Amino acid sequence: MASPVTRALGAAALAGAGALAWGTLVESRWYTLREVTVPVLPPGGDPLRVLHLSDLHLTPGQHRKVDWVRDLASLRPDLVVDTGDNWAHVEAMPALLHALEPHLATPGAFVWGSNDFFAPTPKNPARYLLPDARVTRDEPPRELPWRELGRRFTSAGWVDLTNRRDVVEVAGRRISLVGTDDAHLDRDRFPAAGGPDDVRPAPVRDDAGVLRRDERSAPEVDLHLGVTHAPYRRVLDAMHADGADLVLAGHTHGGQLAVPGYGALVTNCDLDRGRAKGLHGWPGARPDALDGSGSTWLHVSGGLGTSPYAPVRFACRPEATLLTLVAV
Image (tube, rainbow, N blue to C red):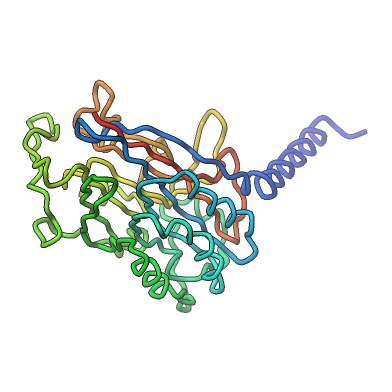
């Protein structure tokens, strides 16, 4: 007869195998739509609906993911924002364009993530538990056709925010945007204010750090939106200082592996675990909290995919988010 210790170890091994099977075969494909409301617009006018897509990590053969992403167009958003890591295979272009095709008819903006540039390579998943999971490769990785993908996006009218600013007209609203390249690869260069596309006045904050909306030039823009892939603190600080009303980011996969009641184990960047996904404030509490008056709204998407070499999620379903922006 097995000893109590042996039985306990066997039960633990069985539970671990079951959790791995669940995370790989079920939860990693159990896509969900999050819906949040953000009080961020000036008074007057209708709400704006923003669809936030991130971290598809698409590979050929992921037909269910493609169909699910395509169906999101039925939400009829006013703006689509793609925060990168679209694919994970050198032959994924046709599937990715098919997935995004119905969204390209909607005004949109995008930035790149590290996995948009290079095909993934095998590595120990335990590296993600380190303070810095980035690796130095002995050989150059295989480059993906990201330039061609960018041309497809921009030719459809989506705005490329790679270390640049732009302005879009959406549903009768004028939105200024600022974005960065991927901070996980140290490619981010925050674009200086005052360029030809920067129609906003300089942000004015009072002694408590609160943006003084009465001194923003309302006829020029209704919203200042920051967009980045990896929410490193330096990028979020720059966007907060730039007067962004709302920042959208991805990269974290929501931690990808979470512990019920504890949350994400890691964020794969220097963002704290408490902001691994969802709607928060930066650098402090949410702007609608009593102690959040000096903060910027921050939404971090948990994303829709995983690395093909670590195709598992646990207590962290793959997601896209529909943000409804309303008046303060």
